[in-house]
Image (cartoon, rainbow, N blue to C red; front, side, top):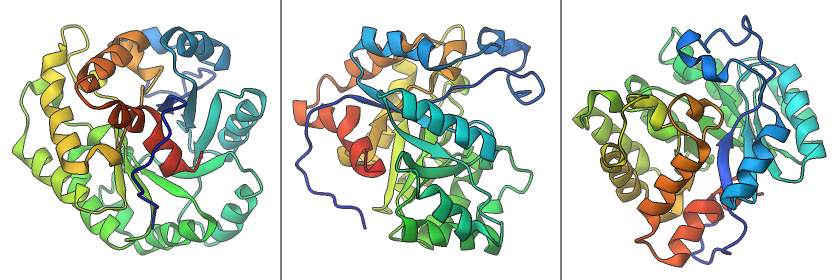
Length: 287
């Protein structure tokens, strides 16, 4: 079980969720023409000036491709750039030899955890399959975290999923992508997110929200009820700031999203702000 002691150092500020890629229209077919602003390469040299301009000290680099090759590239980036504090990669959790792969990645201290793009799976309950759960059951042995990337229709499955591993550190990415564009807080999403938040080993990234809103006309006040719900459900010690850069650029600049988050949490104490903007990510990912 994670150590949840209340003392959290105020520095550094950490962006808990960002990506890099060398754009390939086939590999990255999900980046459609509506998202043409991100149909290009995004690499460490593109992010570092943005982090410096906003006063963010470091980031957690998260996978977008489900390949060993991307893991290698991310670890290479992390080895060359001090601002990358950790990597969340991908591993085939259903592979009978997954334990050997996890042991291999343990040689790389910057690899902190793993993620599978569950939101894109035809089998919406893939996370509950015995082979997938077997892989998850091995993560704690190696000290790895797991990022849960899902849409709201999968939150019910995630409740059963996380219940099976009460000591495994989990984090819900992008507040499970509620339907913000509909301009309503659905009772189904709210009830499900509160139920998952009752698991003390589950954290939540406040990230990826502007891309679930109307890209051209979203307003901060439309996002506040969702953030309210997540903070109330998980508590200030289990939520973390993430930019989802560069995906966020389809709807907002890095500075806009970071500014919205800083403004929202400005009413919280300095210690609570330090937790959201770095302390919780450092604890969760053992940065």
